[in-house]
Image 1 (tube, rainbow, N blue to C red):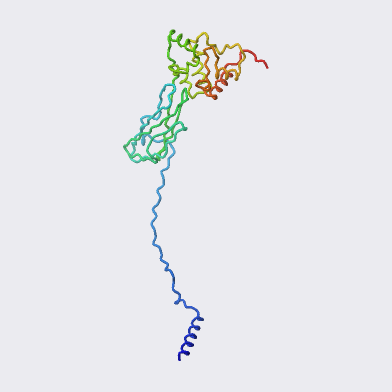
Image 2: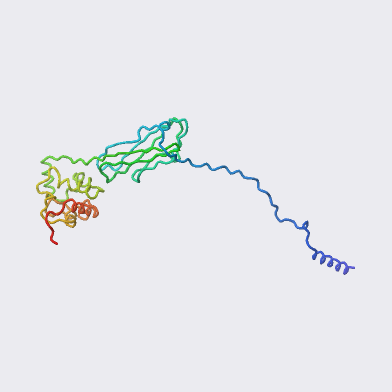
Length: 285
């Protein structure tokens, strides 16, 4: 009886194994769950600058153009513009763009919203180191209600040469006779070094050379460069500027010889003089 049951069990198992599986017999391994909808808020769009002039009915300025005079060798000039939102709605400042990299601004992070009845302040700094004469710089102030052009006008005054008495000039000459490089040290620096800092070409000549060679009280032993009786060219001017003349009042301007000028500044003076003061004597080919 035991053998028959085993045989019967094996037969049934074989039959079942050969039968096709029914859909009801297949159990899913993972249920599919529909995800609930997710609310995605709309991303606010940044304000855009509107074309056209910013109306005075929206923003009133204390001034849109600032003019100022500064002393020679002033490195930085600072400006402040004030405005008021006089409209009934917000004004959003989108950008404040200076004309060039020499101008930097100080203002709140952009975009900057100015609510009705409140004031705004824009601070600007212009780097004028090494510049001279008259300068005009501008800055674009753009908002979602229009734009405004802000202007700086800067007059850099010429350097003021301190007046010296006859006795003081005679004393200076005696010092220079002993040490021709003395003009680059002590109190002489403010007249013979500082004015030429960072300058080139004609501006450098006017600051460092003309003070002696074209001064109102030019010493008799200082030559008139426009009346030199020897042939001149770029190399002539470069050599004299860089090395000066021993046993005279002419100092060496090269930094390698305790002077204030680098090689590029000396080359710029030589090129300027060669063009501005042509040789008075024909040069031998």
